[in-house]
Length: 369
Image (cartoon, rainbow, N blue to C red):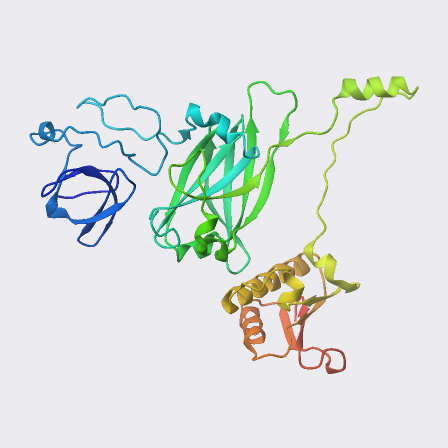
């Protein structure tokens, strides 16, 4: 018999049963009421969700969830004609609403290990949690190793609800270290209109390797890590009537509001040393205040990422040259930079002036050769 995750099953050779949590090769893992997983041969199980001759013999309800989503409220009994339907987003149980007030209002990413016995191993379910009173439209981008962003998912989540995004392996979690979530808020009636937000998030891999970081929350039965992404950005610009009242109070003519666009300074500007020239120090101590727990590969990835971001910014802003300080080590960072620069056509690379940098920097000239 073929099984899939979420099937309700009963053991043939012993009492009890549960819900299929995962399948690995010939083993079917069954989660029982206590939350433990029992690895079992498929031949020792019978599916009890299906309508048929076997169903009438196994009509117990083991009180288990059908997915990793918390279900504390009694569920209406399903008839044989009604197949279980999973909604796009899951509402917060009423009894947990007060408990949820302990958490700041906003948007969260939730990382929920499927194996609750060993929290630092096995696949992880990733959810988007909307802990606000507004419907949201979201757009998710993940940063790629080359510094670009990959549009990964988009959709909507109801107020005080959460939505399952992906199931990922521990190895795939490396692709979830950093990204941006764009969010628009919608309310039928609002005192002030919330601004759309574009919030960056960054998850340190070391955070996932410590079991104490996984905690209980009102939204999930399982222990999880909640990553706060952004709160609702409410407009702080007073309305026209308020501005007019203030103007009259102080004897000033009526004030007209004008929309303002605030442009963030280009990244390369913070490294400018002269017109059209910049100097970027790629030593890890210059890029991160807390790098003691980073592995060598994580440090190299961060350095390469910053190199590509500043190079792209320099090209966009019309810079002529950028000096990149890589230091004198075993040559790994320098070789990484040189390899990455082969992907760019309109650049020329040479050693930076020795009198100024020694052997620890390269000079990247931008523009047509």
